[in-house]
Image 1 (spheres, helix red, strand yellow):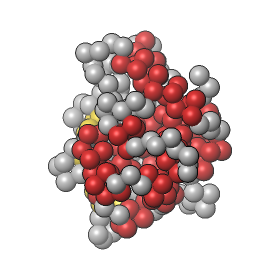
Image 2 (image 1 turned 30 degrees about the vertical axis):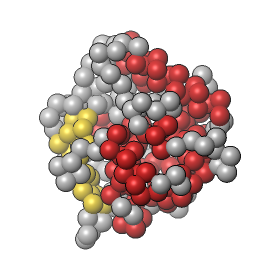
Image 3 (image 1 turned 120 degrees about the vertical axis):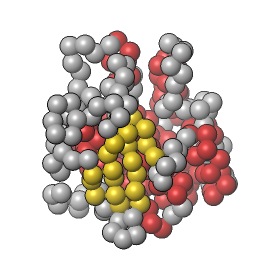
Length: 245
């Protein structure tokens, strides 16, 4: 399948990132800059703050008040960028996120998409919304960032297959469809719930075909909406956000 997200990841790799740390203040940053931090983190294996099992990293937004996320590194052979996101000791899960989105937005996917586009441009906007928007924001950006571990000599075939999944393009398609007046009556459950027909994030580690299921979900999305590099960049990047960390 075509992968315009590959060009986007190359673009992200050119963005400046702060020095390695276990705490990052990302207030006001675009989604692309946060993804760039994730990329630098998951590839830091031997530095002062290595991405190793159990290591906890903190992300702060605002000062004050603050939105604080904790990321606990939990790498595996197949997913060396894997980790667990928590907010106030709560681990957001796609099932509960789906329920919370329905409770807040009902079936209004268009308003949700517009809200998310605002926070992707500048995460300070998160303070205008409920916690479920914050949870979706951090989870989706980490879905992109955790797949950006550079292949090593011991990379598994499954890792390589997972790395090829064009997640940033898939997310762009999702938000385009959510905003579309002819969105085929698509719901939050279709994309965010683990059983949704377009859900391309979770898998069952006991099911060796789960990567294929993700590929099929993304391929189905591709048939509904095409995207190009500029579409992805427009969603995740704020042109004026050029200041260094």
